[in-house]
Length: 70
Image (cartoon, rainbow, N blue to C red; front, side, top):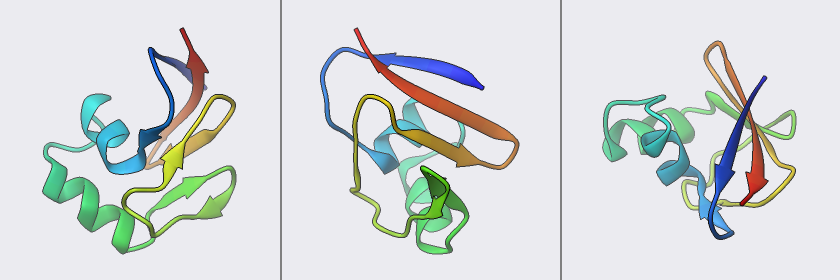
C-alpha cells in the first residue's frame, strides 16, 4: 500500500486519481469511477466528487493508496 500525503482535506476522488497518475485525464477518472472500478474503504464508489479524507483507502487496478494529511 502506498501512502499519499495531501496538504488539505478533503480532496475529490476524481482529482486524486488524476493527480496520482492512476489515470491519464480527468475524463478517464470520471469514467472509471462511474463504471464502478474504484473502491473507497473496500466499497465500490461511483460518486466522482466523493470527498476523500485522512485515513481513507482508495483502490484502483493494482494500486492501493492510503491518504494522510501533511
